[in-house]
Image: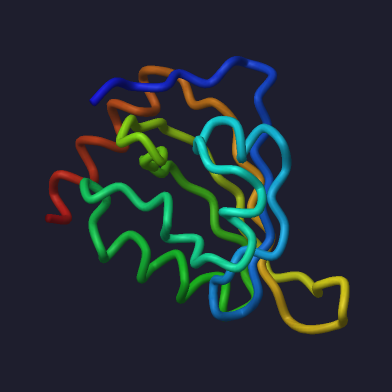
Length: 126
């Protein structure tokens, strides 16, 4: 499959409930992932998880955000059509519109050197 390279002005944002169910997705995220908004809302955020991502990376991510800390890192995601894209993500605990615990993720385009470092790190985690 082909790589989708984010533009410098892309800013992907999503919010999930505490179980990882998408409750908000902005237009950039919907467009890059290739799903419609209605296809994304109510789905597990791992709908975009790429199989190249090591499970240990997501365990560290969840352990961090569930403890109330901010997680930042590089993530390889998979679009609906099977293509992939890399993001630099910042994820933190927040409160949803209905007052429940939630998580918000804001993602931007990483540069080629950052992607290469992430690929090398993730290779050691397989």
